[in-house]
Image 1 (spheres, rainbow, N blue to C red):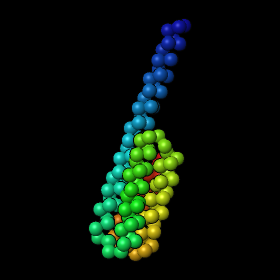
Image 2 (cartoon, helix red, strand yellow):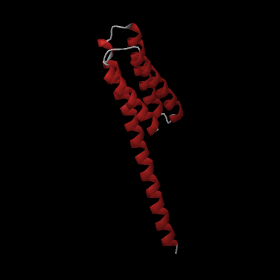
Image 3 (cartoon, helix red, strand yellow):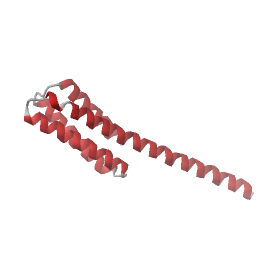
Image 4 (tube, helix red, strand yellow):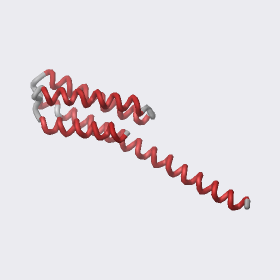
Length: 118
């Protein structure tokens, strides 16, 4: 009887440990995607001539970097809010006729996906 209880306990412990390790991997993947998106948005800046576009793209890039750090710190609610702010900055860049509209729009959609994955 005690062996059966021990086996069940061990099995449940291994399952819980496995789930915890999986959560860590997912957290790192989401943070890395935030960092990659920040780099993508930053790469759009040199082609911009409108100072407002430059400001909004840099702002969105910094916010995505911050969100990545918050995800690693287990601050998902704060990360979601920061990503929402980045989406707003990217949307503003879309509406002000910034160059590379398609890439900006795609970056906004990617940021929204990341927000919903949290």
